[in-house]
Image (cartoon, rainbow, N blue to C red; front, side):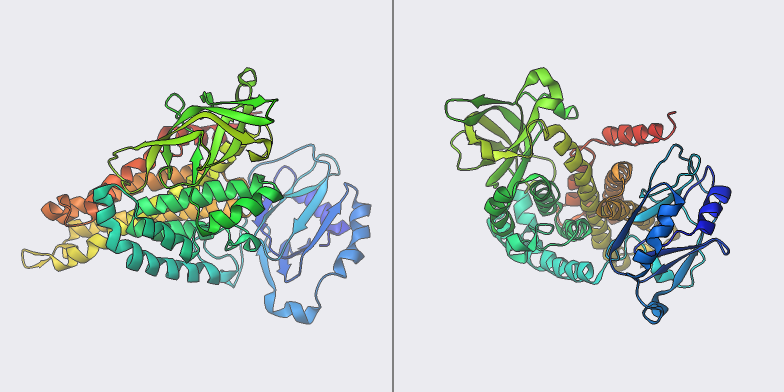
Length: 523
């Protein structure tokens, strides 16, 4: 990474009160004469420079030594035109900081400075005018890596061959077949982001979304089971568990033990942090004692490991909320009767009651009072998983309906040939693709450690609306047969309704988006 004196003067003069964003997986070279930014292949390196230009110059020789030779760089040269007028501004900055990794896809922002200061940091993507002869240098957010593509193909086949034959029976009985749960663990899709050393797959968040989408095409009920286990609970252990907790629980979570996320209560739905479940410290036994009732808990009937959110001090309001790990074998926990639901019927939804449920101090997940922050962060990510589930649902309904439209003949030609019908299914697929882009954009941002809260809310909101609309239209396109259980459209329609309710209602998503918008306009 080299920032020259000439470039410094150019940044101050031509980029004042504006900033530039561009993808940055490799080495950055700024050329003030041509206003170009070239990226050359390089290994991991990072440079932290102080505000003075002299310090930047001093680092030049050290950093250039870590760059590959010109011959090594030949095949990977490419450039992006740095258009000097961009959105936004930022003042009073006092640090130059640049960290990059050839394995990541962070986005780098070059900001104007107050006086002689400059800051370079990872932020959400805005725009950079490109002049790039290689279109593959910035692939679509829905483009998959080789690993993700292979995973998609295997899971697609698994869903059709293993889950598919049992979908109708599980829906009718309202029960998740234990063989399906066991098969998901055997397939390795219950520990997608879990570390390899603990028995996980070690892939990223986008890979989890790929799995959820492919399963949802066949059965959204199985997809939500996989989703909650991966995007909420595996992520919680990845991020907040101690080494001892990881060694104890990860092998089970990846190989055999389904998990449940217990936050909601009858009196705390959208206002989730008004929860009444309490955790009291018993000095005599050196244990936490949990008491309360959780409602609408997914996976609870089959779960062996529960993450319970309870308040350790109501005087501290949400700052007292703490997460605890509770095993199904604990005598203080009881799972109630299964709810008889409209959709995703195979997915269990029950009350979970805690009555003098005693757990050791080692059962605390994260720190005391960290539960509020933990739940917010996990649900922000979980929304993307629900978006992937709804995209898969919409595609499943669409793909199961279109063949019939081409086979069904009316007035001497297939129903799909009528222009009025063509307009409808063309628009439906366009909406599905739009939702998919939002979902995978949010997933990529999350993986890049860029801000993604607004994008996640948009993705879930759009995907759930598209799922409902598509499933409803599919019934219309099928006519009378679509209204019967002889076609899967009616199940997709029933399953789609839950999308606008769980992991944040549609109105909550709109509130989240509005708050993010307002934050950008406040002085």
